[in-house]
Length: 182
Image 1 (cartoon, one colour):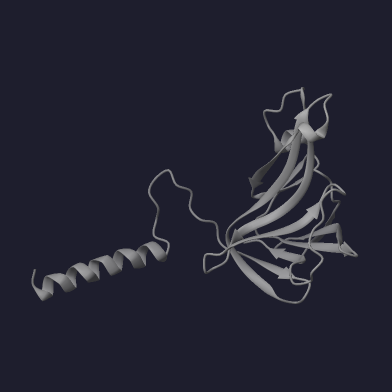
Image 2 (spheres, rainbow, N blue to C red; image 1 turned 30 degrees about the vertical axis):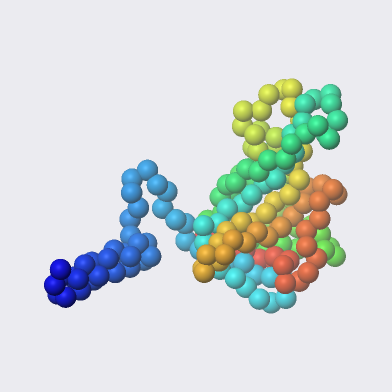
């Protein structure tokens, strides 16, 4: 192969790699990546996250048996689940208020700046396990924010708990006070 042909192959490979990194359209059947969100911490720092989701950890066990016979599972979604309500996490800012180290309140701020207070309520069982049978008990445990840093590192932040059996980090560098959703 001539030097000119080798250079053309390298340039073609470089163009393909650049298109992939720049977010060229994916093959059909694959979901397009959501825009990054920004997480703000109690210590004043912030971090963008891409490929993010809200992860609801819950425990299930057979009705009438001990919870120790149960198993822990997670449901990932792009919505804030509050009791029977589902609030899409798009183009809003979610602020978390704390009493000590425990999240006690939520405020949703829309694009126009309108603020709405939200009560922290555990999602109903059907929101976490849509095909739930009457023979199963579901106990929501924790809401995490999961995603990747812009350099590809995986991150998970505990936002709030639904039970006294689980605690979120008290370190201000890990305590999320605001999330700006794209």
